Picture 1: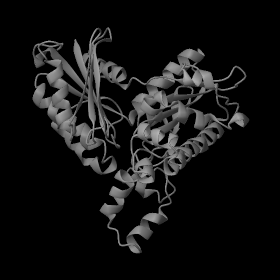
Picture 2: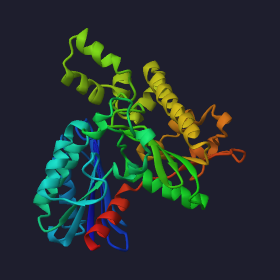
Picture 3: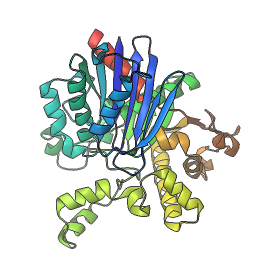
Picture 4: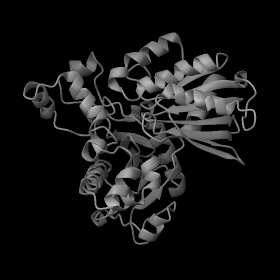
Length: 392
């Protein structure tokens, strides 16, 4: 059975076509820098790779390009769209409506759409992926796998906000957590390396969106993102943690509307607001040239991550390993070095040579805590869950 997985992020689309249940990858690829200059599309087969720099203003156009590659007469892997029987979609916010993988129906789509305001950079992109897929693959079963599902194990003392109880009881305002498919996948890989399920791990997902999870004995017990995917770490264009008094100041003193504040915190802040760039590769390149704003932004980013490492180590009463994953976590030796420097009190000591070579384990021999670089594979996790749902 052919299962196509679409992982539509805030500025990218990852895709993989699997032969299930063998989990054989037929093809894979990435559309990145959507809406930015020099957008790219990648398409990878076992013995051939295509890479193009093209104009990709929207997720819809990006998805259409992916389908054209799948059907390409020379390098395509399907002759007709009906060959794909399941399309599995990553959906960021499931709110209180979804705690498990779900077959997509018109009612499910409406609930996903109703959550746009809680994940404005993601749920609309996820929804658009579903809409386009339904038109291109009308025979396929469409399945949603929610980022929030893995974090359902967070205990009440961690997910409840200190506001009047009725906001949780009646309106379901709480910490939901995100990037759950990624955190679940890499934490299971880390446990396999440690050869135990009784572990204390911090998973660090660093991309355009960023988050960290405290994973104790295989279960999420705390997470940096909350009711929506804006809190916690400094991200590509999202602010991360901010004093909410600033929001009132912007509105009451500086004359911003609430929509303008929301746009500011979601799309104009983070690394973009600090440097003028949202792509970390550009920021690192500028920092190497002596750009002080970029140098400071990298330091601020690492400092925020360090604070959460300390907090989650305390919450779990110990730490066995930290895991770097996602685009920045897997590829930026600079960020890994900045994060792991001066954490010897916690038993974290990075080995520069291993870090530069991007080894699986990059800690020094004397480090009490393992430091892993584990590529995430949300797509295979989505394929597994989608296939299991349809065939259960």
